[in-house]
Length: 121
Image (tube, rainbow, N blue to C red):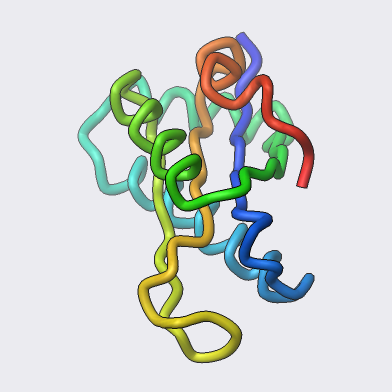
């Protein structure tokens, strides 16, 4: 079973490269923390497999807050580890702006049901 993590960023915000990288990193780390803090055995097994397989990640884009929230809600409905990031507002964006979602690590075939049709960031 192949494990991966999908990170989804909002392209409509026109974040600078560094800002986008930081938001993607926040989302990725937060999803991992969700797994570590959970009592979900399957999630922890997925994390271990993902680490052993090289920690595959893909960064994808959507064009609106509605789209990114829909991606997040679909991940929740499928029982996947996920995180949604709201910016603190210290640099380029107003406080509370939703910038990124991370899904997984988890089984690629499940995550692709949500993010498989999205384009690379």
